[in-house]
Length: 279
Image 1: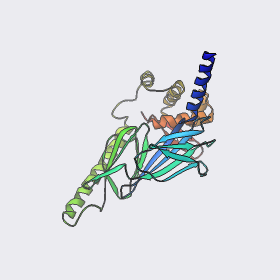
Image 2: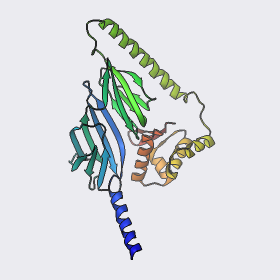
Image 3: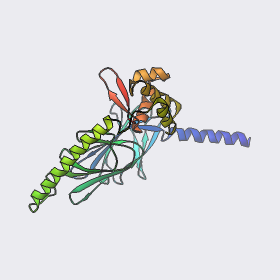
Image 4: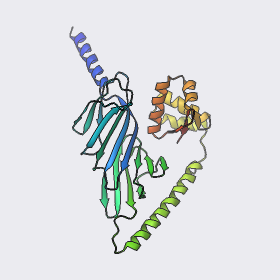
């Protein structure tokens, strides 16, 4: 009887744990404003049978917190010890947004955004921002948007036309122009380096398969990446999904996981999406 009771208790505990905090972050975007405030936006995919999500928040102060489902309907939530407890119900997509002043710091003319995360994220800088330093090689740069890999990352930038007084203004402007030029040159050099394979030749199939074994991937993810490699490094989502025999929703979640890890890039096409290897 005692063993039976313990088994029932364990089953109930596992069910409760599965119902809370089971989710995937499909995107995280940080929009930075001139005054240092940051708008943080998440798109979350709750796991099946999960009715609640516990989302750790970035920063210590949160303003204008909004939680909605994929159709823009508000969801119930509560703030608790730096986390957001969301009652997601049967929502397939959960969208969270809020503002915080805690992610940026200014020293002289230079602002720096700091973030530590297990997932990749996109930073949208002000239109007049000039990047002066990055803690790591970005996954993608598009205009004033920078996608950074997971880890303890920082993005440093200056705001053109701000922070320079009348004294030494010309010198400050020249300094910004030089930095901007170096940034452009560095950006082109990086793109050329990536297009040439980072200075390395393309690996053989055996070498690529050996790389996969050193990554934290399940068998389906390994098969998908190997299939894309065999197709020359790029294939349609539908093609990969059919090749490894996955349902559409399961495959979509898998591609999102691989993209967050910086292993692939999902490219949106007019009729279908494509998946491109990034390592």
